[in-house]
Image 1 (tube, rainbow, N blue to C red):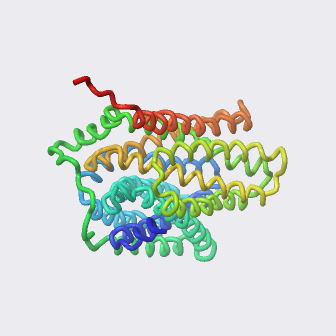
Image 2: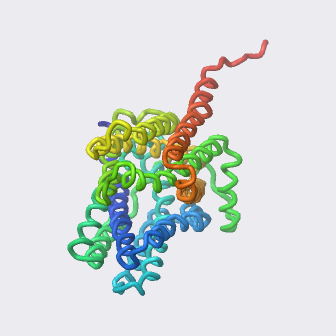
Image 3: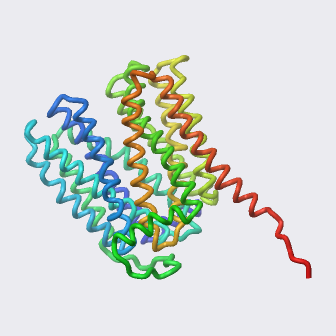
Length: 417
């Protein structure tokens, strides 16, 4: 437990950790409540799906701003400002009272997604500054625990508050969680352990963003990781569509079963996060990324084909809980690779560019699955979705794990005297 407990004994990291939990819990409250509100207002599944797309587009459009701000501004102050903006952006929801309010709900969904696209790169760029590169795997593991617990707590709170108190109750809970996050981040951090390896020359915001984008071209590790992230995001976009059809059509489940199986993945995520913060904290990030993606692909293949044996929901509760384990391992490894591959003063731009690309490929995956499901059929798309993760993992193992290991073991040729 030394890695995780040591980090949680660090006041600066603990404050960021708790603030991140509060913020992510709040986001899940609205992610659960607002699509339900849209469906209640319209009765349309397509209009509800439009709201889901609004949650992805800001990450693409705001990538230049998010990365530059994360690298040019005090990241703690930026996180506080984003929290305040989230509170203000949610206020119009207090006026929602009928189908004519749909534009307001859409606007808030887009605004909240925009704030999240600013928050995540700054938060992830701040982690190595507070934890140090030697504890990066443990730190990302703890952040993975955070994300999983926040998913459970926020989703439960959003659904419960909406059911018993309506949208105003959700907003009060949301406001309380965001306020706690901001209060945790208001005091200055006493120390940051990692400083930029070089002081960047002042440039325009556009030039600064382009420099971050070019880092993927210059840095082989980032090129490989970016390609892998694209494949995984395509798979994730397909999963978001196929999962609902799998539960409702293949398993003949209910809407409640969709929520249950989607949420239970957090259980495995918590276990994985604890392991990363303790016993697996010294495993190389690239190894976590590659092996996690391979296991994720194999488990997906098992899940999609399990209905030939049984359609009992209880079996899939266990299977989807297991899926949460490689999911957190993969994302922790991916984040650590991105955090450590570039210079510190470029981290925010690298992360925001990666997240923007991931959002774009997730949308492509969603649209492709929706367009092809009737023509190609679910079984074929299930196979493609699983294969994308397997290919991503194999690429990482061959290009970032095996290749690096071979180079380290290669004998050094000495010149003759």
